[in-house]
Length: 276
Image (cartoon, rainbow, N blue to C red; front, side):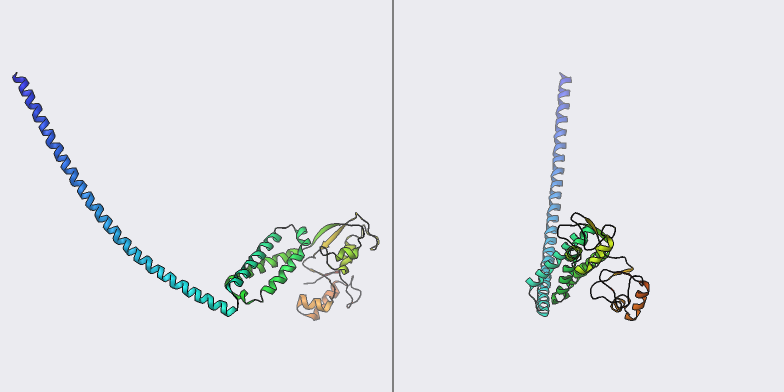
């Protein structure tokens, strides 16, 4: 019985000690929670203060932006007044330039022989761009940048169109060299017929006799050191254009004596060698 009583007393003391420890642990956890809560409150207060400061800065920035917008609007009005055009006209001008750039990109993607057939588009675009440049809107920086891009693309296309290339033309009923040369997709100039004749002498015995279904080689462009004579050309004019000195016409004459009957007689479709 004594052993049992001692054992029970020991058990009771152990339970009591465990209860005291649990209470102490619970008290420490609550203190930690309180400390954490205070820390979070402090953080929230600091965050709210920072938010108020940022909102104030944001409001100041919005005011600056509004001022800049008003200044830009005033400047834009002044620019429009200076060039004498409305904003809608300026936007339409820009859209047309964008469309021209897209059209030029399409032409640049064409094969040389196809581009030659559509060289009229390059000429038409070049003329239209020249007209657009006369507008006061062209002086705006944005438009100047677009026009510079267009000029670069046009220069490249003109150079490609000028490169020598030969296409095939299948003779149709009623065709003759004069009419073929007159076609817009060929030379758009009937007086250029001798060029087709000379290129196809192996199959054209008489320039007045060609036949349906014949396939003729049609040359376009000339080499860098050559010049294709067109209507209205004469040596004096060509020298002035190429050498910036009309007095050097005799250089061209001397280099082409074999095909120039007389210095004052050159003909369309002749290809002259141009000395450097």
